[in-house]
Length: 509
Image (cartoon, rainbow, N blue to C red; front, side):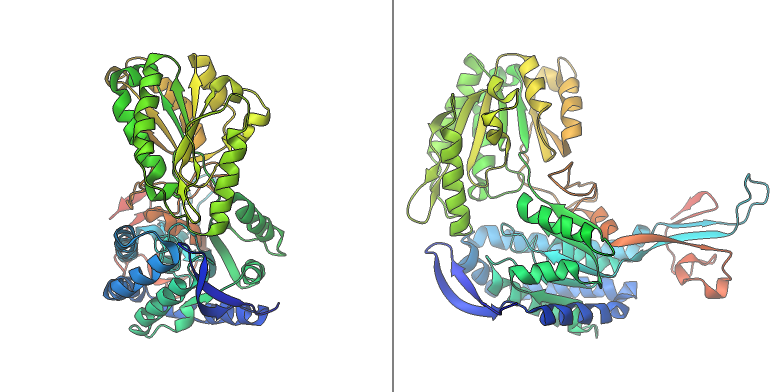
């Protein structure tokens, strides 16, 4: 593997700013993984882990100005957006620290022997243990929240798993900066710096997924890249779990009654959601089923007015810009596709937001219009105009898995009258998060959150946001007829750690 330079690039101009590092060789990947593997013992104590996560949040907050400046230079996402994302990242680290302190994620279950049961029950004690080194593949569009210190890293560390992060090429300088901050936090608790490894380069990412000491992987990115890594994880001599977020269309259904009741508000809300962050959110609504007729026309007018007032913006890199411009042009060239506001190149380095319309009947059967059912990364959405409920059902039946699905209902429909419940039942198999009268952009960090969905949205049934994301990096182990002196402290009758548990069928908190 040749060691090529890794450059920081300004997306506003496309010019290289500075050399950050060189691409990692196979030997360097091996060294990073082995250093992480050796750091496992330092994470064994839950108290140390929780303190480390809180220290990481403190160190990141202390470095806010420099981190945001570096991130903006490489992503052009703007200080306001980036400051908010960094705050979210710190909140997430502290939230996982609280989860570690509580201990419920260990799922402790104890059964004493019962000779009267059929068959007899021996002494059984079950809890969850960390898998080992986790490979984390950073996302382009969230340089803090889904990158070096993002949700995959935070949840893995909370589980007791060291990480080796494969940096995203769109923000290598920021990746180095954040890794340095995390290692500084680790040093405060005598945790080896190898607990957070960082490698650069495409080939390094391939070597990482193949390394025999890597026990699991988390990925956020494209369908093509994620599927290649997913297949590599499965093809290893010892396959490993691969939790990938790959792509999502995030369909929206607008009922005729909802459009008649509040067309202007729905059109404006859709415009805000699809252009947020220059359309670079993984939960951007990419397909909208809206009624034909006067109510739908009013919605389109509102959408047209709002999108037309949206300034051109910079995408994360020129490759994405080129793909966006080519993608919308190919879609706009399909029969019966119209562009009320034409998306595409806004300037030499920018793109303009827009949307396309198409009769829903064009999407109801397999054909060249299937391209409209694929995610197009950037500020564009497709509005499919339907004539009746049968067309809505036909289109929904052809959609792949998604992170989100949304329905806009009228006041009466939301109160249980009409087809509201039926549409929800049709959307639920399609997505991991179903919204009513809202917009999918914005993923709250909360215990009940689920950020995942049927393939290709994700490659597993797990979430990458929220407290249960920790479950991805653990496995259950049961001890049978094991003397108390040999049991882990978590599984002893006297419960010296004060853990929530199920003891002989009774939940104890």
